[in-house]
Length: 169
Ligand code: S3P
Image (tube, rainbow, N blue to C red; front, top):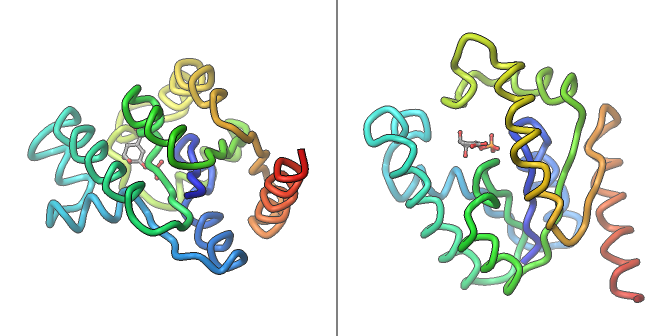
C-alpha cells in the first residue's frame, strides 16, 4: 500500500486520487472510510464523541485498510502520529510525506471549512504549532515529497520518480 501522510492541506486526498489513477490501483481515503463506518462526518464525530474516539476509529479503519487489497491510501493529518498506526504503515506500506509551506497549507485549507482542529481563533497559529509538533514524526516516512504551489500533477510525477528511484536501489 502506498500511504500518504502529512498536514491538512498538503494535498493527500487530491494527489492520492491522481496517483492511484496513474498506477492503476484503487484509492482509499481514511477520513471518508471513518465517516462511512461511523455514519457521521468527521466534524460530527469530533463534536459528538470527541477527538479521542475519532483517533480510535481512525486507528481501526487504517488497520483494516492496510490488511486489504493494495492501493493508495490518503490518511488524515493526525494518523501517522499514532505509534501503532505508524508501525503498521511501516510494516505493510510505503509511506510518503507530502509537505508544503505554511502559506500553501493555509490557502488550501481555506477552501473547505470542515476541519474541527482548525475551527479556532487563530488557525494559522494552530497550523504552525502542528508543523512544529508533527514534522519530526512525519519525517519518519520512507519518502519525502514537496507538494508545493505547483500543480498536483507535478507532485504525482515527483512521487512516481521517487518510487522508481527507490526500486532501483
Ligand atoms: C486531522 C486531519 C483531517 C481529519 C481530522 C483531523 C488532523 O484530515 O482527519 O480533521 O489531526 O490533522 P486531513 O489531513 O485529510 O484534512
